[in-house]
Image (tube, rainbow over the protein chains, first blue to last red):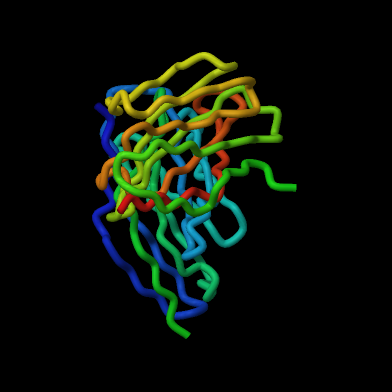
Length: 111
Length: 112
């Protein structure tokens, strides 16, 4: 079964600084998708970024970018110029034939 | 316009009762899902439907029965509620399998 591991239960970052959230996954598949979702206190699940495994180029969305290392099965999220509104729980997720979530990382942003 | 909506947002009920949560998506997606998020924030898929047909059924107790009257709706009915059913339940939809899933706002269920 596929598993997703987020080894950082909690992270802190100073406003305007950069932070990287870690994610590793386990799969024997070669074709799959990876996602980062954000869940603020409102509990809404918001898509941050998506990566297709067949694409070597790392996905970027404005201040959010990923470092996708397929051989290492690693999919980290980098948030640049952190803002107070980035404070949330971040979930890494793998989709082979169903979406499997990691345990989440709480991100705190200090002003 | 809300893309994926759920009703109710909050549900407080007694053990042993039967309750339903409704989900509707106006995105024209073919696939809908139910997820459970427990008290430790862990999210796990329960069911998925594609064009009203059940595709994924994780090891969920028989007390949980999803119903899809049409591809825009996926409701979740829960019989004989137990304390352990207390959680946040999310509905989601996607155009196809492995496409980006869009989530509803969640329904917080509290069983007393």
